[in-house]
Image 1 (spheres, rainbow, N blue to C red):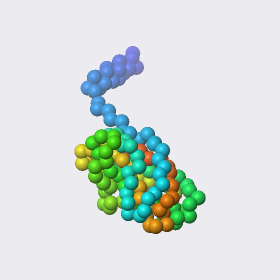
Image 2: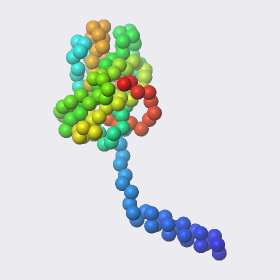
Image 3: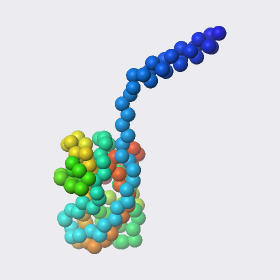
Length: 154
């Protein structure tokens, strides 16, 4: 009899808690493939269409391995830009610095303030770190939001 009372009490508590409703927010951690041939150093190129930025989590970047010696030695400069729609990047929102270097075959997070600054879309920007990187073609995966625990690039 005691077990039935406990079970009934537990079920009633569960129903009451479920009736309150809890806000649910899912972040956009879907990986999107990117590739681009880098122009001259210090010329930033936003290479991705905007990805919906749903929370304040960091941006995830997985820079694939490459056979290019310049990319292995010097990496690629990455930045995260913010914008109000999927097609227009407005402002570099990378935190602490304007860009950060990520090397091939690494997964990194980038601190940024896209959501905090009121933008709804994040864009990934790339730049050659020096003249040796010009004309190279990095590729990999990125997502505007993240759920993993990877090292930060910035």
